[in-house]
Image (cartoon, rainbow, N blue to C red; front, side):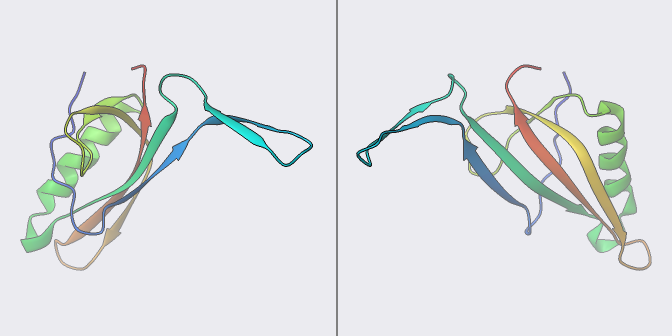
Length: 113
């Protein structure tokens, strides 16, 4: 499997969602339990740019994302201790002028590559 090795820049942000089963009872009581072993899914907006006029960095990252074609790859998300599996099915790029480009990608955590 491929590994995403580029450093995410300031502006990269993520969120997590927990999947739970919830039962509500007539007396106002509710009970929640995790839905499966891997019930947390993280989603990240990862930003990479060609600051300093190095447009090749953005092109290398874009080539990597296109080679994956939406298939999972390994990446170490910020504030995590280990590599995890993620997929990227959406990205956008922006010309900032000259040879300065910004690439914004949506990474979604997956558990079975």
